[in-house]
Image (tube, rainbow, N blue to C red; front, top):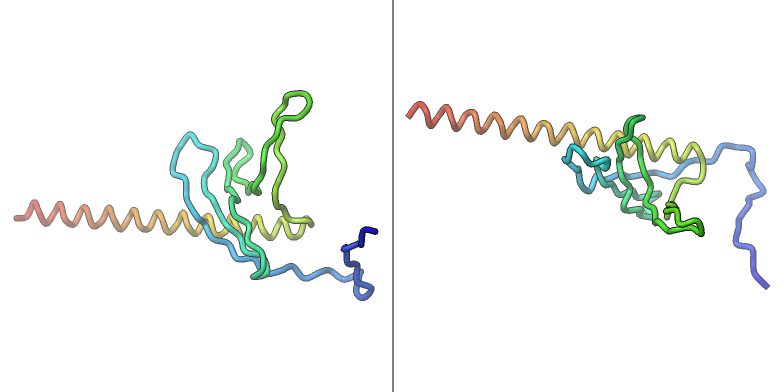
Length: 132
C-alpha cells in the first residue's frame, strides 16, 4: 500500500507560511544584442536546495525570470516546455523573481563600473604615452 507523504499540519493552517531564505548568484551575464537570454543564475533555497539554470530573459513585454525547463514534442508534433523546478505559490514566485532581478541589476551595475574603470585606465595610459 502506498503511503501518503503529503504533510498537512493541524496547527496554524490559516496563518501565512514563512517563506524560506533565498540566496541568488548570477553565474553568467550574456552580452549579445540579438540573444533573448541576458543572464544565467543559481538559487539556493533555505540553505538546503540549489536550483541551477535559471535565466533572465528579454521579451517584447520586458525582462522576466525563466525557471529551468526541459522540452519535448507532443502527439501533435509541437514542441512543449515543462519546468523542471518552480515555486509553488504566487508569493514564493514573486519573491524569487524579485531577488533574481535585483541581483541581475547589481551584476549589470558592477559590470558597467568595471568597464568605466577600464576605460579610464586606458585613457590615462594613452595620455601618459602621449606626454612622453
